[in-house]
Amino acid sequence: MGLGPYLEAVMSIYYQKSFQRSFGTFPLNGDALLGAIDAAVQVGFRAFDTAQMYGNEAATGEALAASGIGRQDLCITTKVMAENFSDARFLVSVEQSLKDLRMDHVDVLLVHWPPADGDITPSLQQLQKAQERGLTRHIGVSNYTVTMMQKAVQVLDVPIVTNQVEFHPLLDQTVLMKGANALGIPLSAYCAIARGEVFRRPLLSEIGLEYGKSAAQIALRWTLQKGVSVNVMSTRPANIAANFDIMDFTLSNVDMARIDELTRENHRIVNKSLAPFAPDFD
Ligand SMILES: NC(=O)c1ccc[n+]([C@@H]2O[C@H](COP(=O)([O-])OP(=O)(O)OC[C@H]3O[C@@H](n4cnc5c(N)ncnc54)[C@H](OP(=O)(O)O)[C@@H]3O)[C@@H](O)[C@H]2O)c1
Image 1 (spheres, rainbow, N blue to C red):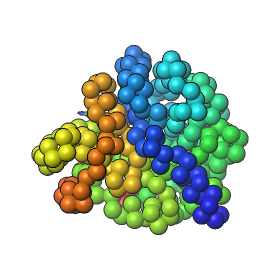
Image 2 (cartoon, rainbow, N blue to C red):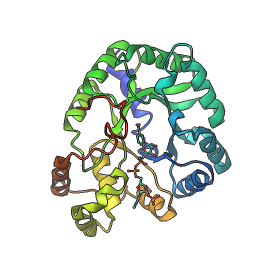
Image 3 (cartoon, rainbow, N blue to C red):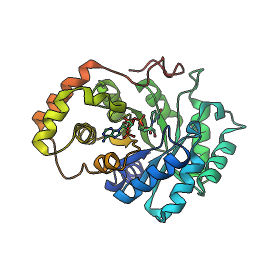
């Protein structure tokens, strides 16, 4: 495949300004999720991230239907869980996700985790089939290592629009990013504020004072300036608004480098104790 269609697919989605900031839905459900999505829509979020594993696609669909935002203005990502990777279950499970979401397609469909047996080919082939059937506009992966990304581009005939991975100022992802860049696969960040861990580092608040922004906003902005789109979750309207309000300033190279220093800590939130099925990350 030439670079043309590849870039076209990639540029059409998470690089669009309105979709660079995505609202994460885990672990919310029910009224908490309805309230959070309502607040997120009101401040301007148009990209939303859910997953079969979260058990909240139906509530996400309900909230988005109630929002009144036109489908064409939304970017919806969901993820197929490994339990549904078999040929018999994959597409059926995506159809169920769409039913729950009240949509006839999603914008990005991801495989949530590499399968336990390490053989990524069958689930990638099913993912491509889902796209060919029009169930999703784009496809991507999540929690893939560099080796897996390299294999995935060989297996697939279509572009991978993202590898969604843990990414924040307390984690060194330079190896992964180098590998992704070499393949032209954009990364997107989950746990973009390290589930609050970033607040334990005074540097981010200190830098925030220079820009009139909070530590969370500095962390999110650092990630965006790395060329990585962000997924962030909050239940509080003030935090939701702050997390969206990160486009009106630019961190200097010096401040980017100061924050880079924090990554040496290499603090991974979603590690093997939380996710025993995780691969050996780069
Ligand atoms: N692909 C994967 O395997 C994977 C794994 C994990 C997550 N994800 C996705 O990524 C999304 C984001 O990750 P995450 O929810 O795990 O972690 P996160 O967004 O880093 O952290 C969420 C936590 O941070 C707090 N918070 C958010 N904004 C804040 C602010 N401005 N100031 C202070 N506190 C703030 C929230 O509390 P309050 O409610 O009090 O604001 C919440 O407890 C998830 O919702 C999910 O959609 C994907």
